[in-house]
Image (tube, rainbow, N blue to C red):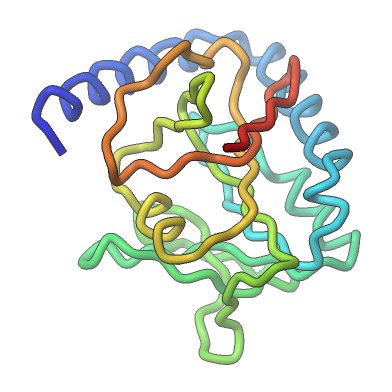
Length: 194
């Protein structure tokens, strides 16, 4: 990755973090609810038997209601466990929210065991976290490259969730950045094909 792209991404991350920190709490809660409802209505979610999601951090769109809905809908729920040494992640099955415990980067994770390892298949949807996205379907993540590495390895249906005000016309990207198939905000759903 060129130093110019790296610097541009870092600058944009700082701007988005600042904008999210200044977003009124009640507006964020309302946006989170609308985004969750839009995800649950999306055909990719409705047709999925297995959903890979994530446990949201304070700067991200909240996934708590979404995680509960996936379990209530009887779908298999997978959550990532990050391996900081290799910057890779593995998804493990979560059967109940009460199973979550602290993992790397203080992110809650599911129990880790061989019998809980999940691999994506044709019936899997991945809900992808992001700070921003653009008109072509590129996303700006937290900077670790975990999702881009995973999506380069596995071809999987993707649905990004983000706040509408974080949409950009064009993001800096390189050959390692993976495009999303769809993105949901509190205002609209966009599909990116081709």
